[in-house]
Amino acid sequence: MSRRTPPVAELVERARDGESRAVARLISLVEDESPLLREVMAALAPHAGRAHIVGITGSPGVGKSTSTSALVTAYRATGKRVGVLAVDPSSPFSGGALLGDRVRMQEHATDPGVFIRSMASRGHLGGLAWTTPQALRVLDAAGFDVVLVETVGVGQSEVEIAGMADTTLILLAPGMGDGIQAAKAGILEVGDIYVVNKADRDGVQNVTRDLRAMLALADREPDAWKPPILKTVASRNEGVDEVVEAIEQRLEWMRGSGVLEERRRSRARDEIEAIAMTALRSRFGHLHGDARLDVLAAKVAAGSTDPYSAADELISAL
Image 1: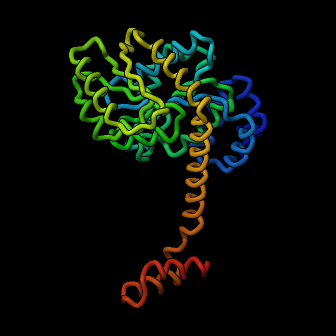
Image 2: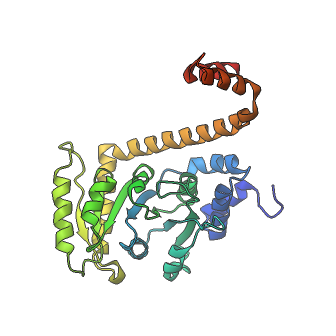
Image 3: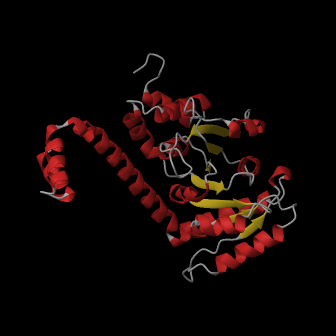
């Protein structure tokens, strides 16, 4: 442990007391894949599972950062503590986040009830950083009531946010071909609430009509959640309160229907699987220079065995 890093138990206690620096330090341990990560997660586990995680996604230019900032303002007006994970594109040179979202949310920088962190996607597909689940757990255990996850605008891969969040907001805007994009990206299957931002522009009725028509084609159970379509002008905070109300209605429905518990179990399964697969790759990464692998590869290349049988033999030997 570094001399500058306080004991994990102390960091967790300080984070739970609302100290932003301790929360930031814990997330840095997550991002850096610190040797202390296992200890951190074990210490956080008893305190997690209370925050409502809201994913915000959509094509580039629809106003995700402005909408996120407006939602923070609306939630703070109700007295709720808000955490924000803004997953920025990675710099091709440093691998770090470009931090554009943090710049756009400066109005909340001095509010002790708000914590904003930009995370680099580091080339990970799906609009999220691969460490996002652990970072979410930090904010959850630190006592934030709502955690907003704003994803990189990467189009069709953004559906990954649906598996990470309790409620997924899909943002669209007039004049960007979003009706076609919605069908292409498959977001009609993952959206829980649809928000047409920049509703003061021409064409908002067309986007709303197209969305409503496509949602009507979706195959849903009779008692399933029916995603609302809302209009906002986030830059002027217009319509944002209605979005917050829809998010809260969605939360109540999930609690009553058992969907919330089911989503969180599914998220835990995915996280366990990802950690296990990462550990296996790390453990068996040395096999590239293993003589057994070379022998089996020669057999497969020669046609004396098949790759599945070779893989079984290699696993049995290990």
